[in-house]
Length: 295
Length: 130
Image 1: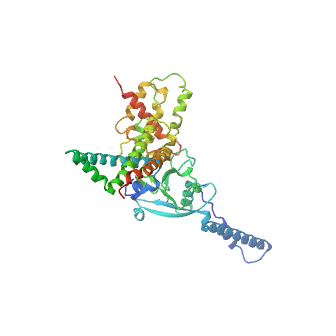
Image 2: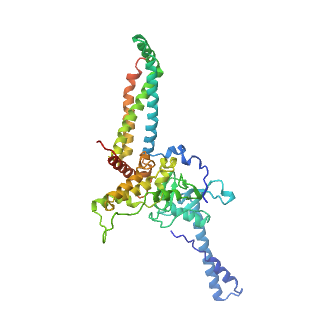
Image 3: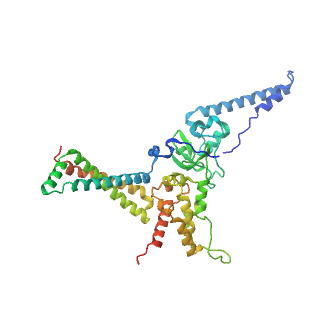
């Protein structure tokens, strides 16, 4: 689906034609007929489009959250209705782009790659955190309610403030940091790669953080995404034992892994199917193993 | 700049229809936990006031058990305790990292099992008061 609206070309030809005199030369007759045909085609196209939009079977009813602190009329949050013509394979993001391009250019939402890689368009769709680009409209019940991610401040329409999420992500030092730098490549064993493979898939979309109601109540809680990041590096054998200890000290602090109440909300909403709860639980067990001594 | 405002029921219990299995398990576990704590104190309070002698103790028990409300509450107590035990086992498995993929199924299983045990217990608890 293109972000460009196709231009209407009928107007140009019309202006061209009216400049001609009234004499009916053969050429003009041909041009008249041509113009009629073009008008007919344009009309039919328009009717087609209207019919498609009117036909309830072929349109999807979106209810989109609107808010803009800088516009007086939008300071009070509300829901706008959009009826978007449905095409096979259309995603929520496609529908939003259609609504923005055809109905209201002020409709604001983040998106970039449109293929579930950039993590920009996590939205609250029909009561669940999902990526707009990964969610098929045909899987959803109408009306499709599209809201910004809960538990985050809304900047405008569907755009939320990600600053706190990024702070939590950075607080676990989300970068590869081995104790000693060997010469050449740092190879990882196949088994170790298998172990951390799922955790490396995180795209920082913040769907999990938004779904977690512990994170909602405790602003200092690292949150599923940050703990998953910590897991990814703590479990990477190439970093060494001391570095792992340092990483464990970050996650086992007061607002770390122990806040997780295993509600599985994050695991349910993760668009990359990362077993977040499993990783958090494994870090808990690791922390216990390190701290529990029977002598 | 971002501003916060009241988003209504988006961010709290108003979304209960959209809660998933794990969330319900958590809510029920908290609820049954508090009920059990409440029961524990009631239990101690009632029994400790009936400790003057054998007769006083028997009288208290017989008087309580003759009330239909108490019998019904006992059924409720059983339901709460059984669910708390079964979901506790489920949480133990979750903590050990066993079967996390089927955590929702184990929640439904503990619900069904609780229901079955409670229904089976009704004749025993209710007999003789109605």
